Amino acid sequence: MEDNITVKKLIVGTISLLCAIIFFGGFAKDIFGGIFDFGKLTGQFPEWFKTAGGTSAKGGFIFALSLIPSVMLALGFVAIFEHYGALAAASKWLSPILKPVMGIPGSCSISLIASTQSTDAGSSTTKFLRNEGKITYKELLIFAAFQFSAGALLTNFLSSFAPLLLVSDKAGTTAPVSIAMCLGIIFVFKIVGANLMRLYVKKFVKDDEVEV
Image (cartoon, rainbow, N blue to C red):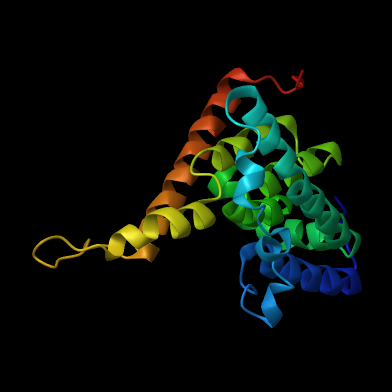
């Protein structure tokens, strides 16, 4: 990561970073038909494709096959954002936040945002960071712990669990919590999980240890 980033590169990189956050964060899904949103561009395969292979090994193969387009799309856009300095800007602006909170560099921010929408995008962009040397092995373990718990929390919660908050009982009473509170609790415990891994890594993982 460049330490001596110029003002011009920082400005361009910051703009690229904001575009990445908007693209992967789902903030533009209702703008221009979602052409600037990762989730909308990825789309969904029809149900017959998902179930055509049956269950067990065949079903698993079909499911894995359906993940390829979203992974390719995520890696392609991350490469574009990196070309315009998004990762350098993220490291400059967000490392002071992410380092003390979870022990990971600011360059993880794009992948962090992506992981809230899609587990595929989160894992593939994290692998990209590791392959490019943007994060260490220890940071990879910590970040993986963050992503593993409640993966794709926005997509999964809003599509599966949020509607349950509107279901009332016989007395007409609904759950006394908001969607924002639920998402906040989930996010806090994702950070707790990352810090538990951070403690484990600090105690048991050697500095020169590498993945196998």
